[in-house]
Image 1: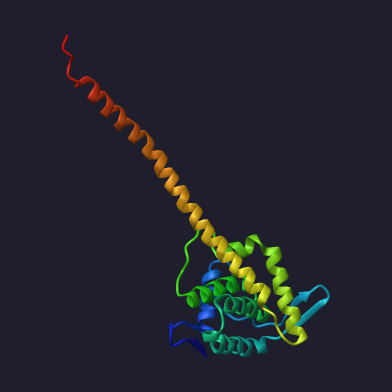
Image 2 (image 1 turned 30 degrees about the vertical axis):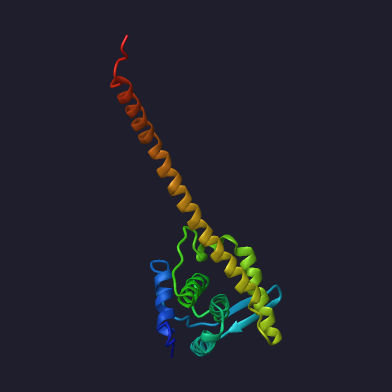
Length: 210
């Protein structure tokens, strides 16, 4: 099962998710890219936990991807990214590295939907870690509304929009800093040229007749 949009050719399937996890967790765990083979307990909020068996993983991942594909053409980029981020975190398909993989996958989905890969020295994945407290609150909100019967991804989508804005702002700051550095380097050069030009004019000025 895969997600493939006719308009963009974007593809995200089970193999893609495993490969992304293998890339994120390379040299960090023994078998990166492999779904967990044991039951885990996910904490949705203090006092509220849910056990997720290993038998549900592939089915849940495919269900998420079908939903992502179905909503692709009629959903904004940030909600699609929020869906990806929340679903991978909720399903918890790997024994370790789920958060890292979810952030990378969400960024991939967001930029694929936007049709561009925005620049910036502080990417969304890093912004999420910087604002981890707020991010976890958004995840808990999505979890709780899901348990109540209708998941609300609005706050998480708005959070990702702000993170992208921060990434773009970091790119603008870097551009301004680069321009300032170049300007500072040019000042001595320009000053030297002006001084030389002034001296040349002064010493080559014709003498006045007495």
